[in-house]
Length: 443
Image (cartoon, rainbow, N blue to C red; front, side, top):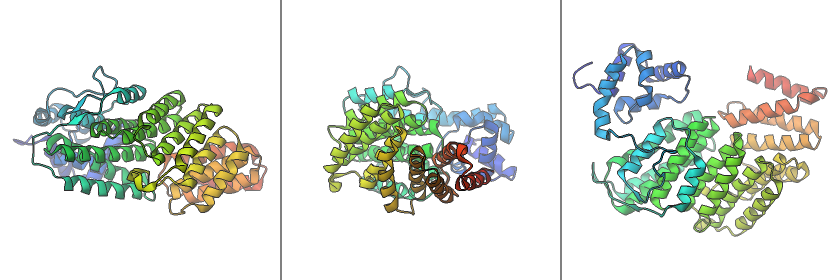
């Protein structure tokens, strides 16, 4: 190792000596570890000293042929600057939401975002968040002073990324969002700023964490998404923004409901709705109640689902868009109807689901291809439940046409589900054509 060489410069030097690009190193690390979360952007952050690749050091040692002792020695000074003690993690004895925001909180968020603590107890986080008092943000006096203009810039960039999610695949988008989030947390850890600017930074960081979790979940990276969501809860709590914290927990409940954790999903969704109720706008309440309804639908609880859908509809009727936070911009009547239609499909009520879904997709913005493919897939399933097999196959074929090129684990899972459900109807030519084309796309 060269004198005074950091772990980042060591990795960069050996990589270049071996004629490998950052992308090639990322690919090799994914192959060696079986973990597909390493990207070129992550390698760049290691090499620039933005992030310490703690859990990746053994794999870097294997791929680049650097001894692990040498890597650990190069990483030691960076660990020293950032503190020797490991920050608290979800599920430990340390409360997840403390009474005041501190540097230790920022360290914990950074740790949760970068290390593998997928055993976080989301239900516990939800209840601690509900019980804890809103904290005061303290100035952190290290590094140069940060002004309100930076928080405004990060917010505008986050809004742009949120709208890009409507049309850009997650593989391209997630590294950009994760980079923005990591850089925002770094400012929180190392900057100094006024209380007002601190709250603004915490808020935009929480919004970025919600978006990062959403995109990671759509890519099928569920453990990473959960880490992003729970880190966002802590950031939102630090900012004193209960509706935003509620949205993060509610979005996490949506992932849980879709990944076989229906009982937890109900608990977390209801906790989120209760926690945001007092301060949330009508639109935000409608969104939170929609996710309560979805959790109940997935748990096969029709009565509770109906109650939540009715409450969501009542809340939406009182919406005043001018009062809403930016992150709920997408919620409109068609989106409300789609969620209701999906719930009724899940509960096997196709006669209630079909008109809601069909009307909404007929008006839907076709540039939002991922959502269009997902919503059509639910319409196809509703037709199949109603024994309209040919129509179900035709709509499923539309889903297949739209989904080509979409980088979405959810879209792929829905297509696989439809192909399986239609398998017993292959005597119908339109079904046979769909299944043949689906098989070709999988191959």
